[in-house]
Image (tube, rainbow, N blue to C red; front, side, top):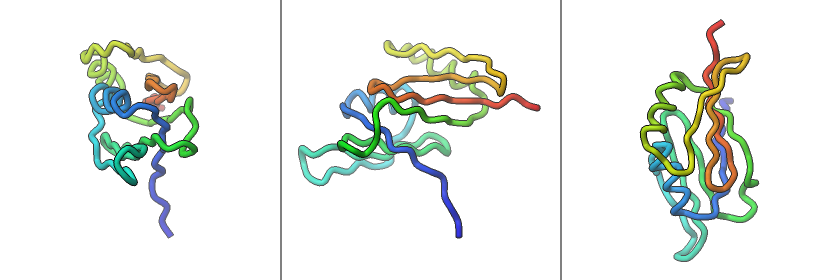
Length: 121
């Protein structure tokens, strides 16, 4: 038996706002999109590094306002990259915590991504 990485499903309400945030700002790539028919809700997969996320406009797929915890290395580089984009709706800071350093960003739908770099030791 082998259990693979979990893929979080994030509820979105606007395809254009989701793409602006996740692709343009956070730097994810769009892997694929699906609709059952034209004028149906979007279901899509995005990816950056080893992190894969599914975005869904389908009612009932996920609860808005959720938080994802994302372990990573070099949180300062990510912060510099995001701040350099001068995105109107987010200017993330890095917070020192007892376990390392965290940087949280909130998407246009109230979902939070908490990037976390563990301290050595």
